[in-house]
Image (tube, rainbow, N blue to C red):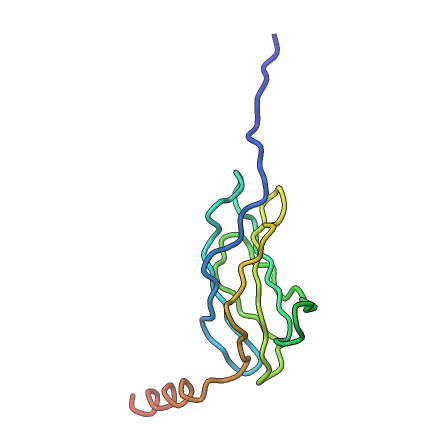
Length: 128
């Protein structure tokens, strides 16, 4: 007699949820997101973060700028040009592959220091 084990069929996960900007600074942007609603039947093993300069119509050339692991829900994208606007998108991955759809930010993000934030930090340090 032979034992047969049926393994559940896995598929790529859905896209991550609720991508957002946590912080901008000179030449960098910190993004966050939530895990996908559907993991495809297997744990999410990582995320693919891509960016492209804002503008340029529908045909943008995206570059992969990060591949954090599946337990990471925040990532700092560095090496951006200070003051330039970028669009970002994120995919989720599991052993079956990457999500078909991307989670995209709703509008472009400028990679620059927010003056009000900088002044507030300095003021807090000065008072304390």
